[in-house]
Amino acid sequence: MNIGIIGAGGIASTMAVTLAGMDGAAKYAIASRDIDKAKAFAEKYGFEKAYGSYEDLAKDENVDLVYIATPHSEHFANAMLCVENGRPVLCEKAFTVNAGQARALAEAARSNGVFVTEAIWPRYQPSRKLIDDLIASGIIGKVDTLTANLSYTISGNRRLIDPALAGGALLDLGVYGINFALMHFGKDIEHIESSVVMTDTGVDGRESITLIYRDGRIAVLTHGIFSRSDRKGIFYGDKGYMVVENINNPNAINVFDTNDNLIKHVDVPKQITGYEYEVYESMDCIKSGLTESRSMPLDESVFMLGIMDRIREGWGLKYPFEQ
Image 1 (cartoon, rainbow, N blue to C red):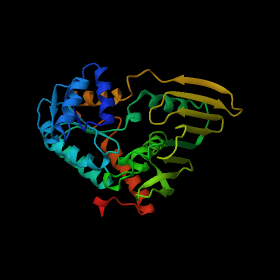
Image 2 (tube, rainbow, N blue to C red):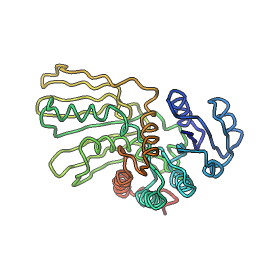
Image 3 (cartoon, helix red, strand yellow):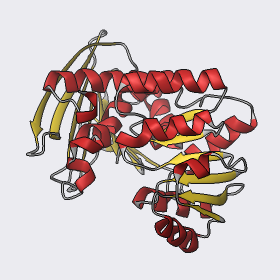
Image 4 (spheres, one colour):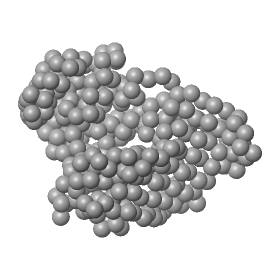
């Protein structure tokens, strides 16, 4: 299948490397608003076509799937452009900026019969089932608490502190913590609590979020753009605890008993970059005539954005284009 990429930044480069190692995925087209940048990207990574506008790529009927790799603030418009031109979409997280945009995009995709999904990679990776199977096995007993964190020293990246680009830790990193909780604890959330430290530019720089479930379980999530965290996800049970290494791209799982003895180690299958799973599933869905992903249905993306909307509302954080 011919893959097109909208946006020629760093994450697009990672996808290009991924496609190079995949079977059945052709590096077909790259689009940037700067034609010289698009041509340089195409030459470097071996893409057949280079476009100086997103519209030109979206109108190319030879494109079978478009990966959207632009800033959060642009996802909605870029994805809608593709849907309106009948191009299937794999849109980088966060899917859109808010739930209203997500609902509108989902409705457009369904009414046009066009495949659209969110590229939040842990949803598609083998680690998801490995984690769920271990919990279901009862190896750590009854699980009542989950903690997860994701922080990097990335505050120097202008995109991450610019309100006009929907910057801040929540949409870039918090989406992973929330996703981790929803994947493994579900969506029956009764109450959400959070605290935040804002940047000088007016977006969230670090935060703590607690999801309280109706059955009494809790998920405690922390994210930030100023320091490096261990990125672990930990499940706590009455027979032990389980540590997932790196919640946004799990690479190993370690299980301990109540005396802190390691009782099981699970390696995650080797991968190209980890992005290949979302691309393979998207291609499979398109070939099967499906318009939604099995691993990340559109309603899941809408639900996640709804949670983030509630959290931002509590902080009084609106992006300029939402005013």
